[in-house]
Amino acid sequence: MADSTYISLVATTRNDNHGGDLLKRTICFINSIYHQAKQYDVPTELIIVEWNPPKDKPLLKDVLPHPPEGCPVSLRIVVVPDTLHQQYRFYKKIPLYQMIAKNVGIKRAKGEFILCTNIDLIFPGEVFQLFKERSFKKNCYYRANRCDVPKDVMDIKPVDEQVKYCKQNIENRLGYRKIYHFDKFYPNFPYQLFPNLLWRFDDLMTRIFKRKAWKSFQQFKTLDTLACGDFTLMHREDWERIHGYVELDFYSLHIDTMALLSARAVGMEQVNLPEDTCTYHIYHEDGWESNYKKPDEKIRLTVDRPTLDWFTVWEVGHQLIELGKPFDLNEDNWGFSDIELEEFIFGVN
Image 1 (cartoon, rainbow, N blue to C red):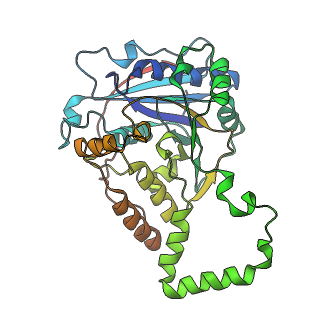
Image 2 (image 1 turned 180 degrees about the vertical axis):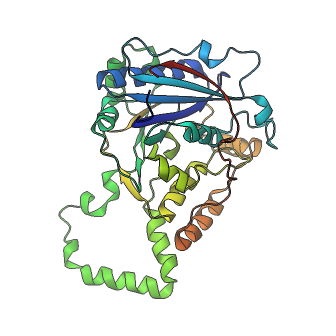
Image 3 (image 1 turned 45 degrees about the vertical axis):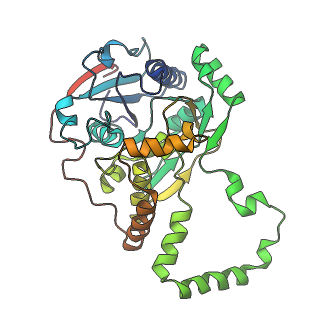
């Protein structure tokens, strides 16, 4: 695939059966990309970062489906060995550093625009229709809803039938929705009669709080952070502007949100895709959302895997937006950009 590639998809995984049926979920994810890319004729680079491969399991290159004949997808599998993984303090508790792995993919992607996503998703045609239109812009980051669906979807074939099943069996929707906008939820409400009142309220808040602090709150509260690790897309130069994801020796919770905070802090515009232009998330155990009804399990999860707390992210995020600067925690070689990693390429070159 030439360097003029428009879209690169970046995800990470390892062959360890995390959450159950991991390989099966990954194959569904990859096959949906192959299918939609071919159906919509979208040249696509798919980068899978294989982090810390288990020594007792085959490498992903030997178990994942390669692009079929006539499919405009280049599959690149980049391997981050255990020797690099073991340099982190909690390497025994956290077998995969998700956001650092995605940085590995971001740094090596050829696409003009880079979508960071996850391997337990099924992509509908609407997403690839947007890729085909090539209408994304610099200085914007793009977000899509994540719709949770039953794992039974993995037993359905072909991909078109899987997507049809997903659309009819959404169990939960995460992300921006029209009902969050008061004027859309209450279209007949005469809010236009109260502009002076609203202006006075904003002026009052500005006087009570520091103006920058109030403005940063206004910016923060509109961020579409729910499940943002599943779909965050921006221009490659914008990923560079925010230095990718913050590379912390922590479980990945909230680190994906920090990327959005950095993007907003440097003035990037949030663009929310239409509700039907979403991703479908295959349910699995051992995830943050899957433990929604098991709060005790969430406590165990954070105890077992050192995690950044939300209130710190909230406070620092406000400060960054006030200062107009991204998180500045990564080294210059973030994403192991100074290290040549083993890579396997299949399909279009």
